[in-house]
Length: 322
Image (cartoon, helix red, strand yellow):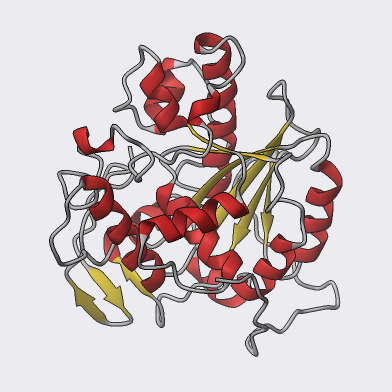
């Protein structure tokens, strides 16, 4: 798999200054990014990255609509195949990234960028309950279908941003297999590979330094059954912005990581945890935990009941992401 930029005929940047960018986050620290301000905001991120090289990340996607068929020797094998078939079928809705320095401090005025991608309820596949939850969280899909970011244009800017392929940048996420699956597919402009080990090779190349907080919890006395909100409550951290939006979740993820380090690791993460995503192959304990799609799980506290594609509905599978 090679990194490449495939321009889309559907991308038509608007100009003239008459369009007012909608804000979904309800927080001055979180900046919404649409097609019109995509290049400007990437330039801002590039200018800050040297001083704020920690990137907390979260995504929002249209649920889980497919379950792999076959015999799977381990839970991580089933998890990856569930991840692969859904990521390859569905489209990314939102990406949130928050920049932090080595002390867990964020830039003044704006710490978080919420990228809103082009998504149409009329043309794209989704799980109905996932869209319902996102809508209740303040997402207006009319904006996304009209003003959303073209993912190929985003990928071209992402590759040149310094965020990828950079060992000096450390990515932070929570139970992040699907998050990095969507981001890897976007960056490479190709479907995820069939074999988990091939995906992990690509993933480690794009993201040389990664800490998954869900995996870090294994080395603490805290329960690793915590979801992000429960962990934040246990750490006595406040949420900024709107829950179930990627920007707010990424900001909370960054704050959780640094407070967890201070309280449990003396401020330094275990090197052995670097690059390990919870529930995938390199998580050697994953076979003992019920953390796989279709196994008594749910996504953000709900279980998708059906998939929609325009006016059609189909069965779908649940995912645990807590």
